[in-house]
Length: 78
Image (tube, rainbow, N blue to C red; front, side):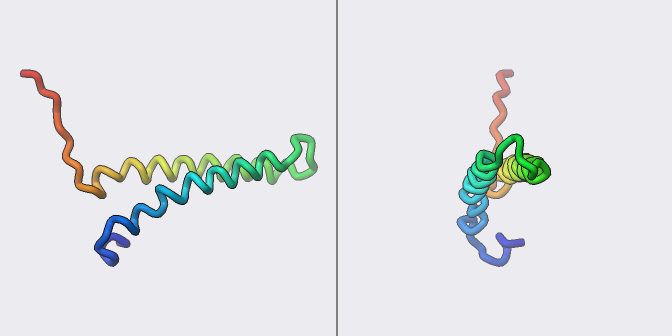
């Protein structure tokens, strides 16, 4: 939808730059919490969010060929 409205793939590329920064933020949050802290549920929440953001990033990256209309070349040797 954003690609249709903005007519430019540059704006759709923002998540590819932003998401690694989000990974770093969540990881830093994990390092700030002590493993014996009373806030163990926050640690589990940060781990869950980190996994969720990484899966989201993998889904975004898998859409790059379709977004840029890259053609898949087959290596047919026959």
